[in-house]
Image (cartoon, rainbow, N blue to C red; front, top):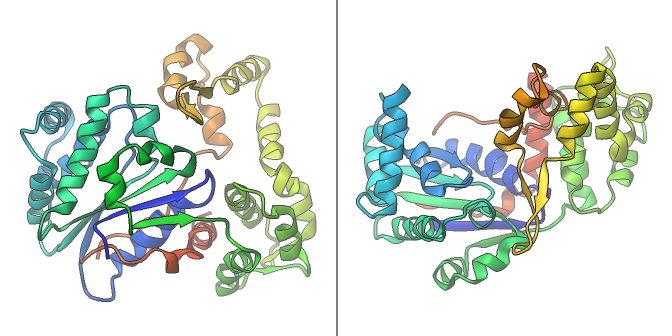
Length: 349
C-alpha cells in the first residue's frame, strides 16, 4: 500500500488504460466503502498550471470564466513560490467534497515534464509538491503517474523520487496471448456478440507480440463493432475489409483522405508531416500538434486543420465512472485495460 505509484511501460503498452479504465473504476466502487475523488492531469509545458487546473475546481467550485483563469494563474504562482502547498489544496478539496475520504491524483504522460516543460524550476517544484503532499503523516492524497520506460532514465536522476518509488513501481510488460483473447472474447460474450470460427485466432496471430500492438487492437475492435452483422456476428470479411491489424488505420485514413477536396488534401498532407519532432537531448518524440493545428489553421484556409485528426479517430476516448488508505495493487487490473475499452465501444457506438 503506497501513496505514490509509478506505472512504467513502453509506448502503447496500456499504461493509461490500466490506470484510467482499471484502477479508477475499481476505486470508485471500492469494496471497503472508502469514497474517493479522482482528478487526472497531463503536465504539458507548465505542470504547475496543469496542477492548478485540476485542483482549483475542487477548492473553489463556483469560479468560472475570467475569474477562473486569473485564479488559476495566481494559484500556479503560489505553488511555484511555496505560498500555497499542494497538501493544503488536497485537504481543502476533500473538505469541500462532503463524504469523500481520499483523493487520487493521476498524472498521465509524466515524461512531458522532461520533454515539454522548459523550466527546470517548474519541473523541480512540481515534483517537490507531489513528494511532500504524499509523504505527510495522515495524508489523504495518493498519486499515480504513468511514464514511458525510455524516459525512466530521467527519473533515475532524481534520487528523492527514485527512493519513493523503490517498492511502488509497476513495470508493465506486453500482454500474453491468453490475456489478449480474454480481452476480446469476454466483453463480447456478455452482450451476445460472436465471432466467426477462427477469427479471434486470426486477430491474435496478426497482433503477434509486437510492442505497441494494443492501440492497434483497440482500434480494430472498435471498427469491427461498427461493422458487425445484424445477427450480432463479426465476420472474416469485415476484418479483411478493414485491412486487418496492420492496415486498419491506413485503410480508415485513406477513406477519409479521399473524401477531401484537392485543397483539403494538400492541407492534410502538410499537416501530417508536422505532428512530431525529435529532440537531440532527450530520447523519444515530442508531439507538437497540440496548439499547432490551431495556430496554422488560419494559414491553411477555412478548412479546420485538425479535422483529419478527429475524423480519423486519433482522439483517445476513456470510460470514466462517477465517484465512490492507499492505492491498491495494480497487477490484478492488468487484463482489464483493453477489455474496458472494447466494452466502451460496444455500449456507446
